[in-house]
Length: 194
Ligand code: HEC
Image 1 (cartoon, rainbow, N blue to C red):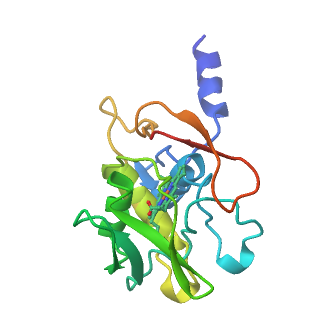
Image 2: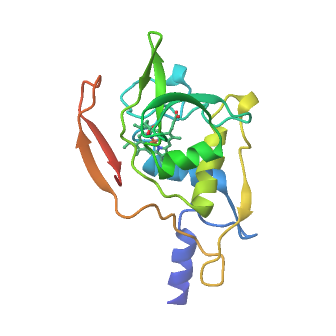
């Protein structure tokens, strides 16, 4: 019985959230996993020139979180009247985007005009290691000169007194939302916790 158990334990696929022998995990692949499961459906992670389809409803996340924060033009709802304003795209901006997505609405330029993205972003109350991981991953989505480190090792959170595999917990349950969006010819299916 014990042998079978041991075999099973060893045959498990290594995952981004399994700490190494030092009890450490690399936050970059953890962040990538969070991105793939929660953000990829609406956000590109490639540079614009590599993007083949523009079906995603959110802005591309490539180049957003750079070593020296860039300025983002957003519609701000802070004053209850939508005003166009400039904001520094730093960690705080990402935190606000996740906790209060409609506070600042991302914009893009189309034929010289500034257009707001639609308000389709669900709330993601990421905290602690989950937030640090998505930040570590977003920092890698840059051209070499603006890029953050490829690896970021930290001590894994403890579970039951030992460093076991920890779970990434995001929001409550996931549900599927089907909606039609302007300028999108097909129906877009988005997953999230609105
Ligand atoms: C259902 C679609 C959807 C999902 C899922 C989603 N987003 Fe968004 N996101 C949007 C839309 C639409 C906007 C633009 C409107 C706004 O700013 O709220 C946006 C805006 C953002 C912005 C501001 C971007 C900028 O260019 O200024 C950030 C940062 C962001 N999202 C991060 C994330 C992360 C990280 C995740 C996953 C944890 C995620 N989003 C999941 C739709 C989504």
